[in-house]
Length: 254
Image 1 (cartoon, rainbow, N blue to C red):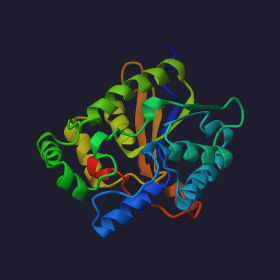
Image 2: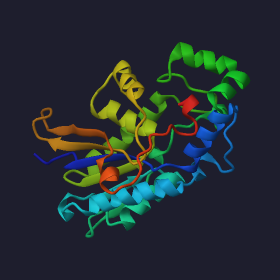
Image 3: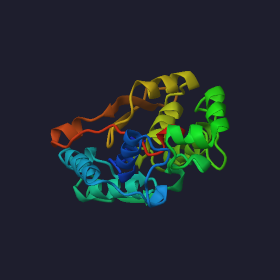
Image 4: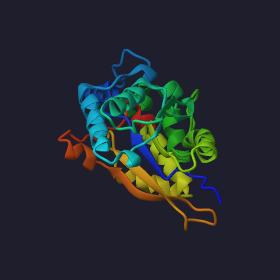
């Protein structure tokens, strides 16, 4: 029977962004709004984020060519595209027949009216949304103009359909965002709401942290992807790049 899934699937959170830095500054100052001039999708990597992405690329380049990613799928957000480009430029992809594609389904969770607000800002400007989130939980709460985790999961189901239909036996890397990484775990491992939220509470995913799945022919009747490692930061440590696990700019609404 033909293999439906990639041999290896890596899911990577983007490197540290200017938004991560701005959120830390807003929290430290007790501000209600994060000072970012650009749209969320236009926020770039910080210099440290560029260093982290290049370090991950160098680590991948140290692997045999037939173990490196051959297909790279990235969120259309600037920080994810830049992370992907640094990985590729550092030699992190297989040199022959490599593919690079931008997929809007991998975009960050949309925050709607809560965009750029800290927790203090949400409670001050939209107290009813803070209460709705408390009652419903982040998995189901959808802010006006934004998405719930369930909405993100819905679009990611079609991403996995694409991967299973067109990338069987391939080596695929996805570069995206913290919520996307967690929601893909939810789907790939058939987790419950409680299970994925418990994983989320344990720790933020490191910038350029790697989640890796490998094809296991004994996983299910037709084989499947099995988690090999989660939030793996050794590639950065091996390349002497600082590890950060900073929440995204919109963490209060995440």
